[in-house]
Length: 581
Image (cartoon, rainbow, N blue to C red):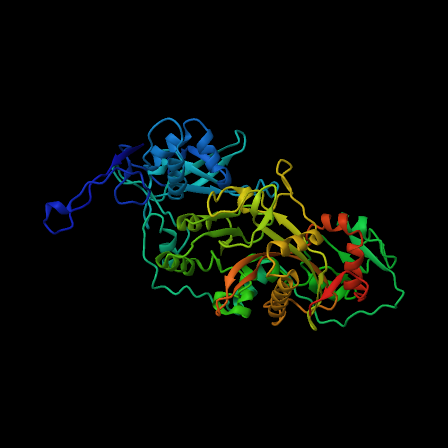
């Protein structure tokens, strides 16, 4: 049905100079002008309507990105096969670090992706695969002759790629597919094709102003969230005992305040404290306006990473505020990112980036890279943002390991939007990397990430906040923690001020029955002020709805009593909280 033809020579440039013609090394580079081509060899051609014109392509390599290096090093023959398939020079039997690095860079010209629709969060992390030597030699065309799609055959638990013609084809015609399939915007297509067709995007503006109002309206509709009607705040007698309906075990186990009692019935509850998101606030506001909640309408503006980056620009302009890493929405701001990346590259500035899914936690499907091709291709797997990786983090000296990355988690309590009333819990939590930090080995999880509590085989270093503060001040005597924390709290204040400044769906909804608990994860980075002074700049990483409070409950048994007293009784004075606004 098909044949593979090698194309080795560059076309004459028309100058008549024989020296202008050159022969390049054969390289099976999809999209390249000198490569292998797949042609139709069936003597009668192929008919698009013929059900026999659907073909299966095997997959040569399937992996998740975080396992790629280990597989190349350990699976017999894999590195040799991938090097041959990708045109990477490889000699000898043992995998060399150089050959592995080259394959890991080149694979973004060959990788395809799919993800499972069902299963655990870990099981739904995107899978990347390389088609076999036949499939990997199919070239790009803006008007392709064939289409491809991944196909998972459940009985065998095996994935293939389906290949079928888009039109009738004669013998000898080339088999091509569109590497930017489904994208009609010419500029986005140009960016998507950069791994195979390099282009200079330096003249394009990298500015990312806040999206228009219609952007937020579309998000509201996509989330199927119905805004509440205006209601009056509910009032209760001073001795009222609130009935709480919750599906959160930590609340059931640790809320012991005498003015709260549990009920299994939502219909009887004064407070619905739910693990999942409410959607129909309108119905709640009509039928049960007095029922108090643990969430706000439109709070995805805080808890979803692309929205967080957008609303934060109200505080810092198109570049974003100093307390948030420079962030691009890869779905809507890919050209601006490419331009910014190339500008930094030209200036010789650090170009390490971290790709994150819009709405996953625990560092799932999160990747650090300095490869533009990698970032561009990650856009195809799931909605993602790309943020500047903090190349100069403030480190913490662990006696057992060395100087490692750490992040800090604060719990903030939002009592109301108008007026803005915001509290922070007086205890914070710390997470540490397990290996000394350096800007290398970007796929070494224990060097670059701090979330260690979900893998029982990984060391989990825990330091209590009251032990951390004196040790931190010993390591950094010029930076008393009280001053550092004041900068952190200022960042929190600015964030909530801008996210509450506009009406929904552009900001959090002022719903009098709403309350919320959020976890804010942050790091500290070294920065220089205009006067040359070296400072620790807080960097907000993400805001989490309904955070895991297991450690809070274990070490501070009154945690949920403090939370409920502050949010639902308006009695923060005897609680371990500080009012920010």
